[in-house]
Image (cartoon, rainbow, N blue to C red):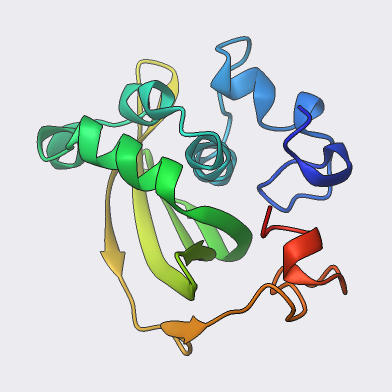
Length: 162
């Protein structure tokens, strides 16, 4: 997709989008691990594909999901970076992924630190909730002439600031 820098997947896997998250988001394949689902959900947020986000939820997460609010938020923010900190699958059909995601909202760089929970049902993984954890840098001002926080060594205005 042309809105991904160098054709790389926004989930920071260093793979091409078409061979990484795109097959999951378009329904061509199912995610085989909670981490793959979490990465594909992040990628879906970067393109505001809220239908995919909703389809991959179950339980309390789905019951409390505000589709229109999520769509407005995903379109408003500029996703910068995903960092997977830990990923685990339990024999009970549950999985966990701890991650940090950075994004720009207006002129503020913000981040989310979450330990997400997933269940394996009917041959598929689903997101069922998450616990927000403290972040080191919860919010900072960003200008278009600063280096991009994604680590590309380019100015923000020439990277994720477009």
